[in-house]
Image 1 (tube, rainbow, N blue to C red):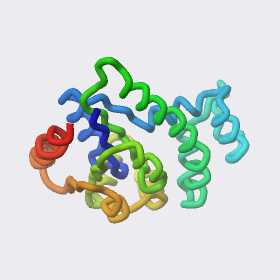
Image 2 (spheres, rainbow, N blue to C red):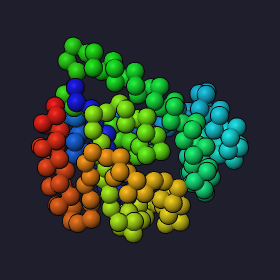
Image 3 (tube, helix red, strand yellow):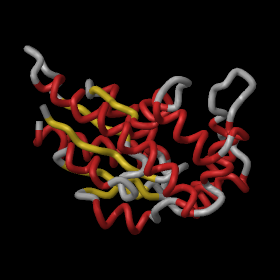
Image 4 (cartoon, rainbow, N blue to C red):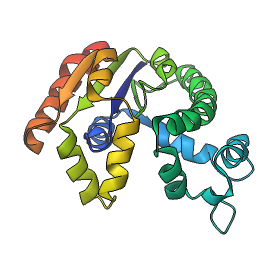
Length: 202
């Protein structure tokens, strides 16, 4: 079972990469989705987040309003780090054993890709994989893409400011794809990575 990670900032094109790899037969594990499950009412993470950030992050039904939480958490790098310190260990406790169980199956998946937006901020996730692919793109292009998806520009820029830079992501990666051209060029680069790296490793 070949396990690799894809990391990249908001608007870089990471989701497009993961979708393409999934279409090739890879089992994709999006860590953001696991993190959202950890925020459900009744979980230790939910309780700690409310204690740390206050009840203003709660919606009327007692669930965490992720938009309100993001607004507080990405107001400053220190706030983002406080949130990551709560959420990342809980996600790791779910993902690590899950990968082990997957590998013990009678017919384990041939390729597993971890979708890890914050790999620089939580390098321990890198220990679960064989290789890391970083997706980079110019900041202004990332902002444009995220705004086109419906995010407020102010929120996008605040999030970018609180997260690792593309240079920091590239420094911990085994492979880098720069998504700064056409969509066709980006897809071609992803196809080349799959053919030359993933298929060779698997």
